[in-house]
Length: 209
Image 1 (tube, rainbow, N blue to C red):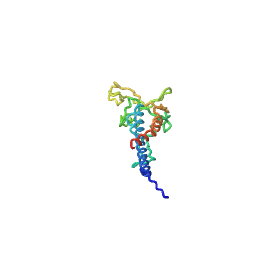
Image 2: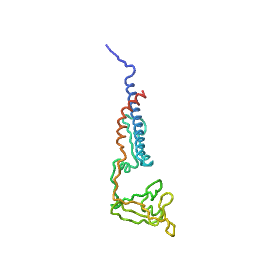
Image 3: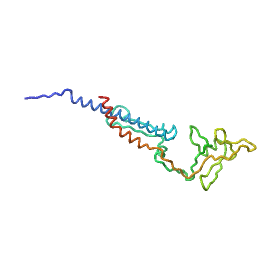
Image 4: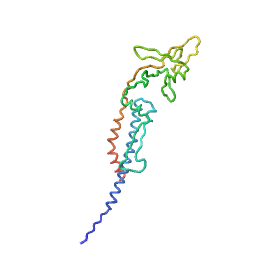
């Protein structure tokens, strides 16, 4: 006696179809998770008051870069990792040369793109020399002598020949080190997104069924 068994629908074809559906679901879920975490990090950095340039350093990429895979993964990173890490940990910052950290006052102004000026850059831009003033109690200073404060609150060279309106303006505060306050919690957002991945995969799988 010879028995023949036929399956309808074709089980092999059905399994292959489900495997492809799984690959599409995992890849789509990782793309969504990566984009979501990038947006969460950018919003957190902006809310922390760290400007508008630092959030834009956050990038993400999904692997594989083309096609679908059951092993798809999302990679999220920053193009300014040292700055981001310092605010995430609350780092202690010291001068690389072992001397002073120069912290600009409002009278110093800004460089291109809102960047902080160094003492050397400030002297070159304003055409003035800074005088060092040591203080036992409190930060030491770099001061611009015979300066005036313009309408924007910046210290500039005074052209007065009588000395009227001239001031000695503190341009930089000098400190040996600075302890940054922890302003970010990037791991919190990462853990939240990681916890949502299984649900994302199931949802994408069902949408594709």
